[in-house]
Amino acid sequence: MYILGVETSCDETAAAVLEFGDGSAPKVLSNVVASQHEIHARYGGVVPELAARRHVEMIAPVLEAALEEASVSAKKIDAVAVTRGPGLVVALLVGLSAAKGLAWSLGVPLIGVHHLDGHVHSLYLPTGEESDAPPPFPHLGFVVSGGHTDFYRVDGHAEVTHLGGTLDDALGEAYDKVAAIMGLGYPGGPIVDRLHAKFLEANGSGADPVQFPRPFLEDRPYAFSFSGLKTAVLNYQKERGLYLSDRNLPPWARPQDVPEEVACAVAAGFQEAAVEVLVEKVSGVVRRENLPAVSVSGGVAANSYLRVKLGERAEQEGWSLHFPARKYCTDNAAMIACAGGFRLTEHGRESFMDYADMDADPSWELGEASNG
Ligand SMILES: Nc1ncnc2c1ncn2[C@@H]1O[C@H](COP(=O)(O)OP(=O)(O)OP(=O)(O)O)[C@@H](O)[C@H]1O
Ligand SMILES: [Mg+2]
View 1: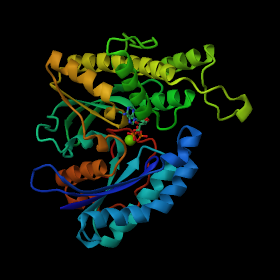
View 2: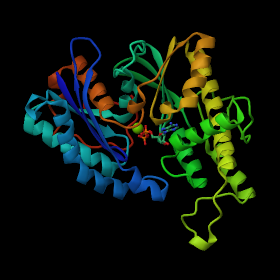
View 3: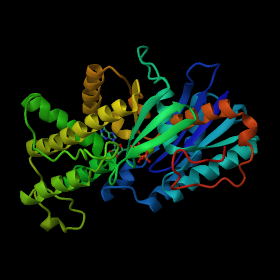
View 4: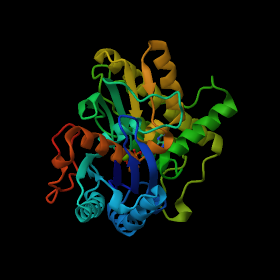
C-alpha cells in the first residue's frame, strides 16, 4: 500500500511516499522537503503571509518530485495523508487544498493528520541503524519542537494522551529567540548546538560556561517555563553591551559583533541549562507514570547534547530511549504519511472517504476527535 504524505503547517513544504507492507516498518520511498529558512531568516522567525505564498509556489513541484523520486505514479497511490493542524492556518490550507484535490481526483481516501501525531510517528520510520528499535507501547512520548514541549502517554498508534507541557515558550522557540538576540541567525537550535560543541572542544567537558537559571518548577512536574531563561540571556547581553537583535537599528547604531569565544560561552550556558531541565523533567515524568520507555521527537530531538545527556540518564535509570533519525526530527511529510498509514490500517479505507468538508484546524489539540 502506497501512502502519499503532505505537510505545510509552518515553513517547510514537504511531500513523501511511504510503502506499507504486512506488519513491518513502512519503507520511505521518497521524502522531499523544501525549506523556507532563507526567506524568514532576516525576520528571526516565520512570517505567515510569506510562508503561505512560498507554499503556493512550491506545493506542485514538491509533490511531483516526491512521486518521481519514489518511482510511483500518482495512479498507484492508495491514500493521501495531510497535516490538518495545528499550525499557521494560511500555510495549512495550501497543503490541505492540494491533498484534497489530489485524493478526490484519484478516488482515494484522505486522512487528516495531527502534526504532533506526525512527530510521535517519526519514531516508526526506519532510522537506518539495525540496532534501533521503535518504542514499545506504552511509552512516554516527549515532543520538543518549535511550537511544543509536551509530554504524551502513548498506548497505541491512535491512543495518545496529553500529560502536560510548557507554560510559555516551546524550547525550539526559545532557541530561535536566543539566537536572534545574539544575532546568530535562524533557525537557532543547530547554531547554538554547534557553538556549545565548540565551547566544549576549546575548554574541555568540565569547563563552566555562563551560568543561567534552571527553571525546574518543582511543584509542577509536567510543566516547563523557558521565558525566564530566555530573558536571562537577554539581560546578560544587555548588561555587557553585547550583540542584541539589530533589526530595528540603523547600521551605525548596531553593537559590535561579539567575539566568538564569548558567544560560545553564552550559547553553552543556555544549552546546558535547558538540557539539564529537560533531563530532570523527563526522568521525573517517566518515574511518575511508571513507563518503561521514552521517545523524543520534534526539531530539538536533533540536538546532540540532549541526545548524549538523556542517553546517560536512561542508562542510569534503566528505561529505553528512542530518537528518530535526524532528518525526521524537523518537519517532514514522511512522518505524516506514517501516522496516516497506521490510522488507515486500523480504521479501514471507508472511514476516510468523506472528506469534502474537511477543514484546516490551526488549534487542534492532540487527542481530540478528527475527521476519522
Ligand atoms: N540541533 C538542534 N538543537 C536544538 N534545536 C533544534 C535543532 N535543530 C532544530 N532545532 C529547532 O527545532 C525547531 C523546528 O522544529 P520543528 O520543525 O519540529 O518545529 P515546528 O514544526 O516549527 O513546531 P511544531 O512541530 O511544534 O508545530 C526550531 O525551533 C529549531 O531551532
Ligand atoms: Mg513540527
